[in-house]
Length: 168
Image (tube, rainbow, N blue to C red; front, side, top):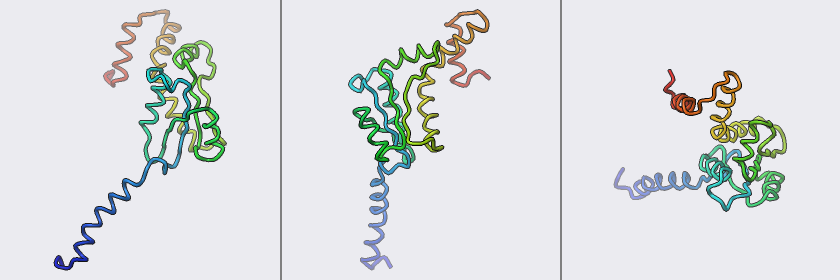
């Protein structure tokens, strides 16, 4: 059986074909494509750009985050069904998140053609990335309002222990 050249050629081609198919699958074939626009895309140190980069790096074969050059391009991709939904991250996101603690005004804009369950899960992914930047400030404000105590150093230590799972 191993002396037949056609059989040997088939044995060598199977791994090559499998690898070719595997590497030909790119994230453009993802089930959900999500457009992100940040006005400060030239500033890699801005919070909005860091969050956008983190989301883009978390792309997989199911959800693909990608960055748009303009809000118009984001809207166009959604209208043309190139993207399932999109997010406009505002300039000075960190400042707006600080203001959110007091005003509860919306911080970012979510654009979608309809309220589908598949795109609602993306909200959770995006908001969880925002939450990590807001969580400690919200906690310290809550503790101060409920107890009247304001000890940020001790609270920070406890918060970090909780985040690392060292509480119990």
